[in-house]
Image (cartoon, rainbow over all chains, first blue to last red):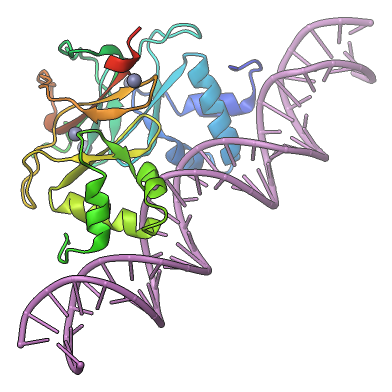
Length: 125
Length: 125
DNA sequence: AATGTTAATGCAACTTGGTTGCAAAAGTAA
DNA sequence: TTACTTTTGCAACCAAGTTGCATTAACATT
Ligand SMILES: [Zn+2]
Ligand SMILES: [Zn+2]
Ligand SMILES: [Zn+2]
Ligand SMILES: [Zn+2]
């Protein structure tokens, strides 16, 4: 079930997602420590995801990241894009590119998760 | 540090990886419950990965899966292939295909993790 | 504005996957 | 066998995330 009431918790959380950068639940819990309980953070993130406001994905160490959706709704999600994690500064964000997956014999593909890792523009060497 | 002694624990664990199917640490701990302590399972898996015998990856719920490597060594790993998880029966395995990633502006790509989900050959509808 | 209804919240306790420290057991070489 | 060192089991721990429940806060109705 998604968001029903426009509460302060929702506003505080949404305010953190101004840029297109992805944020981990842990990071958000830290940032909002004085304002929100961690249970609330998890619950509101969940609801925002239900509503198509945020989408989430895992990085290679099992941490869940959340980012703003572009054009999702409660009933339809379009978050099949890849994500990029900088191995140097740790920043994670959505990639606005399309990855073509070849046909796979004997298998029906429903969805795919692609995490690309490397150096971001600020950490290039 | 990898495996130094050929112990029973190593044999028991390797025996579980006869097929190319991936196995989760949790699954292995369950299967080997009467023979090995869970700490040992985690430690041996770690070492086998170090040695290039197994590789691991995460699924979308944060569970780590292990699978046999094809031609990796202690110093060089070649596990950039995608993995497939059947959303119906839960089975996970390695895909022997190549996914082409386009150039990404301003970013240097080091490595990528691709998890494809859908229906396996036995769960097709 | 006061009231009633119910969603949302805070808190503590819990669950789960995984890790750590250390003493005991098992490989290995001599 | 002995000595040496890795590996193991156990218990205790840890961190991320979840649950149950009493309290608080939205918000619709009067
Ligand atoms: Zn960076
Ligand atoms: Zn995204
Ligand atoms: Zn299946
Ligand atoms: Zn694989």
